Image 1 (tube, rainbow, N blue to C red):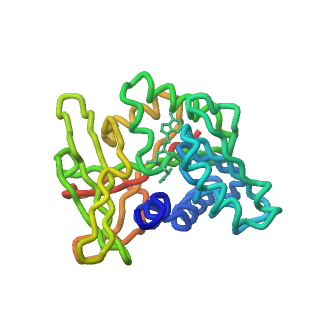
Image 2: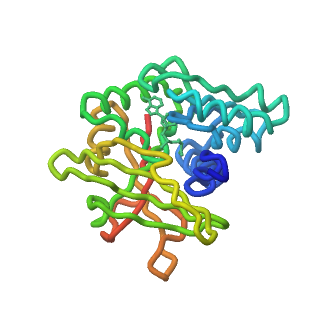
Image 3: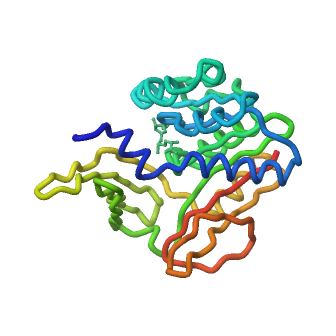
Length: 261
Ligand SMILES: C[S@@+](CC[C@H](N)C(=O)[O-])C[C@H]1O[C@@H](n2cnc3c(N)ncnc32)[C@H](O)[C@@H]1O
């Protein structure tokens, strides 16, 4: 690979500053106060942890991930780039999110569909219950999901990003169980450059929005809000998500859910 795989991943799929802006906007709207502590489940390299603490001296963040490799990259890059006082407010924990209930926070988030790793109702419900137990009294749980008529078919989408192309492939989708296999490939945009296949792979169960809403309520959350992206009038999304209970079905969409304690 011509560049570090986590560097490519972050550039292709993450927008930590927009995520933080969305979290702050919704938290302030719901609780009329400031959230201080963030726990990012499935944190990977922890780019979001850095964005969370870098704009306020009173914020702290903890990231939980099973895999030491992205944590190591995150420590060397995001963590190391913080000023010492901010650095002390960020912690990485290498563990299973199912065992993380000792890490309490105002906000807990699970982004990039990482909780799809829980393939049974029992496991996903146990995870949601453990998140609820970990939230402070004014707590919110943020998660994202995707859908649309294209969501359940084998397909590949690609996007040119600067000097490389990012590919998101659904390699298999079992309509009976919703078990699915996704992969990320990268290719440098230069003549004859090879496609680096399956740089990241995800063995998941796809959960629908309504299943997620039901499970969150069953886990004890008082209210679940869903968000829909505005359109850019050219057939795409404009990156602005608003709370709603009604939406027009389309081929492909991404959405946030926010569960209130
Ligand atoms: C799709 S990446 C998400 C990274 C980051 N949250 C993001 O938004 O891009 C999924 C991450 O979840 C981690 N993971 C998978 N199962 C886990 C578990 N049970 N507990 C903690 N981390 C887990 C993987 O090691 C991987 O780093």
